[in-house]
Image (tube, rainbow, N blue to C red):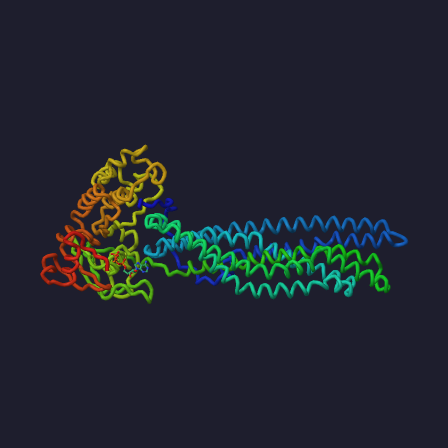
Length: 597
Ligand SMILES: Nc1ncnc2c1ncn2[C@@H]1O[C@H](COP(=O)(O)OP(=O)(O)OP(=O)(O)O)[C@@H](O)[C@H]1O
């Protein structure tokens, strides 16, 4: 495992102030650009109506030119109206898209700012790998889905809906009977569409599930490839993927093939040639009966064939609107995630005494982890957390740098509840080095002096020396100026030592430490242990202990089991007590204290 690289933070705390009201889906999210969208929609509607002008003009021209005494002046007026209509159409359409795209730009910036501001207020502990996916989806994919909606779909939807309605109204005005003939095949299409959409509702869920199975099989295959190969399970893993893929194909066949035939028949019903056939056949009968003149068939032939395209477009934009709705819901969930509050009137801790006072904590109501934990960490002492895997050691340790807030009880530093200490002030007192090392995409120097940007080069180097990483950095192409993730690539152990250098330079009096060195080789491990000893000197330490000597020398050991402190004391006392600690000790063969449950 190597230290993960993240983009450089944009800097600056999120703007203070109350969180906007709880998000209410798509409507609430697009509220800031509502007036622009209404304007774009009106323009699109006017454009769609204006697009009929040339067709109407052709009919009017034909009427005029076929009359026994054509009026030249009127002919030119009609031509002028047609041209004006065309110009108006393009003007309106162009302006509508310009307005919608500007609104889209504003909305995207607004949404991203809102999401990022919210992220800035979320508890540190929220930022897990799973949630990183959520953020990526929200900031990138979901905001993009909103782009389709705001930038394109609204204008396209209004235009596609207005054009056929306006055309039908006009045809109704010319001759209602012929209008009915023109749309005689439409109900067949509409009925099919309704049935197909209703059925697809059930199938879409199945489709999602089938796709999910394929994705899971691919992810399992890719992520587990090493294990899969090592244990000779390549064929089985392959089989799982092939089965998921076959299931998917079978499902699609089952879903699509019964629909395909009726779909092509019904699509044919509203295709331009069929509509034209209906208009001309019906029209011929009407003309034969003397109900209309031959010239009156013209607008029906011209506008009838144009009815289908907008209907199909409506289907597509409908899909866009549904996806934007789903995206808005996901963004809404993210924005509704409870945030941490910074105190209105922050207090400054008096000293560095840490007190856990009857602390309860859970990851949600169903996942209670810590129960009634109390402990005092005196300045300059080492407190070791031990216990079986899953006992809550990491959870307890993460509460001190306020990755989460306690549910009940309190944690105090220098007599002040953590929730009453301003974030920046808290991190001047409490530092942490966890296994999950995060290095940012900036120079090694800036990574080390993250907490103290004003630290000079000598201080940075001295911290790196103490953390046993100076030689590694020196060997990089540009030394301390090498950029992490570009010309500075670190192994897991090296990344951890860079983070130790960072903690050394930050020089916080209280330090939370996860001592695990599972990924490090023997040489790197020894270097890390040396670096940690350097870091621990003279500080108040809360350490998730995995190694014998840390525990043996600790001023106090808290033995956790199922979220409760079941034993506490010094190593020798606890061994004498012959309880869980003694059992862990024995099971660990005097080497590793932590034991898998
Ligand atoms: N982010 C999280 N969301 C939900 N549950 C969590 C989260 N982190 C830990 N847990 C759960 O909380 C319980 C305690 O986990 P924790 O990691 O604190 O134990 P631990 O003693 O540090 O274990 P280990 O030594 O194996 O790391 C476990 O049941 C774990 O599944």
